[in-house]
Amino acid sequence: MIPTTDAFVIPPPTLPSLAVHGTAARFPVRRILCVGRNYAAHRREMGGDDRDPPFFFAKPADAAVPADAAGACGVVSYPVMTSELHHEIELVVALGAGGADVSVERALDLVFGYTVGVDLTRRDLQAKLKAKGQPWEAAKGFDASAPLGVVRPATAQGALRGRIWLAVNGVVRQEAHLDDMIWSVAETLAQASRLWRLAPGDLIYTGTPEGVGPLERGDRVTGGVDGVGSIDFTVG
Ligand code: MN
Image 1 (tube, rainbow, N blue to C red):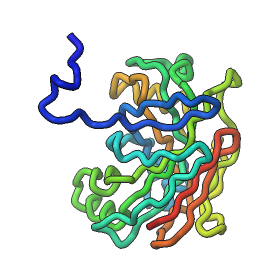
Image 2: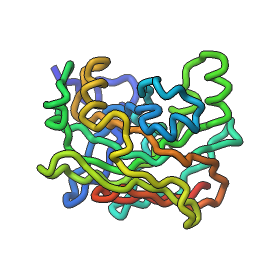
Image 3: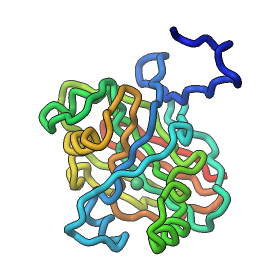
Image 4: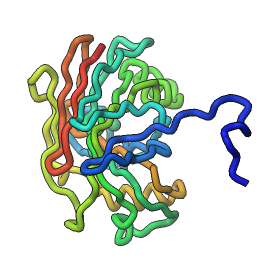
């Protein structure tokens, strides 16, 4: 039996969702998985070993800050418990189908579309957690840590190619090419599907290129991925 609203002891949480290009219907967010250190130059700037493969962490679905139809997320509050809030611009994959143990060859069949996301990070707290071998949730999965643009449905063209960039107050801080990713989108999905059964509604942040850095209150953040879209917000 499918429970009705009356079946819950408290009102059920609202389902987070994103705007979709070309339709009024929205993309429902089930969960947010993220890849760490998927660009070699960023792995180096984080002090990583060149032989370490990328890895996964997660943010809760309700960390999403959805953009309006123009890609604007409005004001994103500077979080408490940090004095070093960092930007990480990323290509984000939106899944329209799921599966476990998906092959690299079949992985792109799961993709509904793509969007642009910023993986906001409490970098000072992350450094402390890393030093103690503690989990990253407080550094990565905090409220409003996932500003996200409009989902652009995938075309039949296959793998995306193009520039990924982020600017703060009009000054470009991050600029790279999707070809610079260590794991391709297909490889990332295949890897993730060995760790979790992927499902429609899953969002996967695919990692950030080099040039991450601090944001201050009042900063205007803009970013984009060629062929996918753009995002902008102000740090409040
Ligand atoms: Mn990231």
